[in-house]
Length: 121
Image (spheres, rainbow, N blue to C red):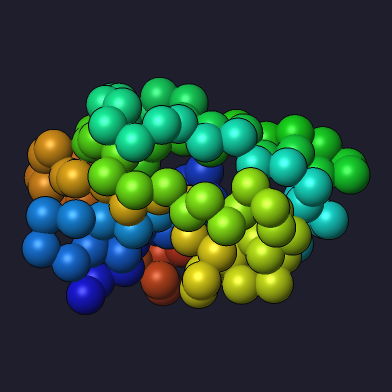
């Protein structure tokens, strides 16, 4: 498994032609207490840069942007009942989507962990 990071503070862990997508710890910390997560439906297709969800916190609302082209294979339904899980484990069990990767070459546009750490420095 390889993990990539976007400038919009999403992480993408790739296993075969499936990617798990979530927000980074940095994003969760910046948002504060998360109270609601809006997700796309299973089967929906999207392109890199599309808005694919919204996270609302007591401080602000923030869009989730697609880091790559794909199709939603699975949503993390547990976030509907417990959106605060994104504060507890945003890079763990509180993933947002599992997606079918449409264009693996787009992963090259994302950062590795060192690049992301430099971004949030």
